[in-house]
Length: 255
Image (cartoon, rainbow, N blue to C red; front, side, top):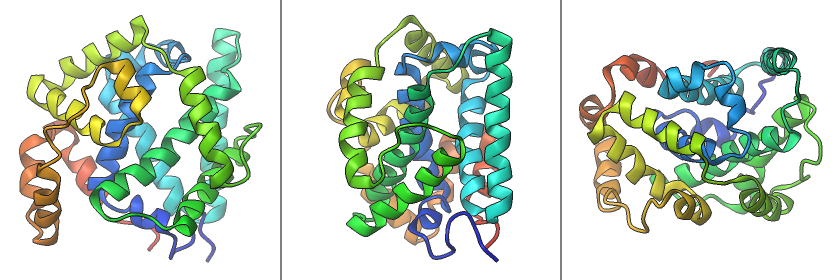
């Protein structure tokens, strides 16, 4: 049986653990807020109403595709494209192609930075594998001007960060909603986690600070993972509404 991502792919290892995915989510939450096309995420009103749920569902959908059989994954990608086509018709405007690429680039960047934070450095070949999987996702969505390799993607990523991110009223409101839905303590943890995985430009635009208070905690958390006691930490800090969802991320569907 052929899967969208090979069963031995490093991408499955990255997206098969809730710990890694939570950091992917944290990074994406920061960068989503800064994207110059973030007004599209406000168009339906669903994002500000439940920003954690909406962003988490986006990350979870990407994870689902990683583990699906190839044909089912392609159908899932086609559904994503169809949903966005419908939103474009309702607004009578086109989502910029660069905005789609930005979301794809986020998934690539945070897959790598989150895994390297919690596990180990990836080899050049493994980074190419990560890029290859998401390149195929983007190609299926008919995105234009995608770099052909991870090496070619690196300068394109930097250019996107320079051209397509800005602090706006939407950015400020989205972080306000994060705080409202998470509470002050979990909101603080979110921002500290973001410092550990987001690019310097995101840190600069959001004024996150250079040093994360979570830095000394990460080695202890990695030890807790090995001792299988990390669930105690997650039980304490995660919102009850999402605990079952997040726990299910530790199981890799499709083997």
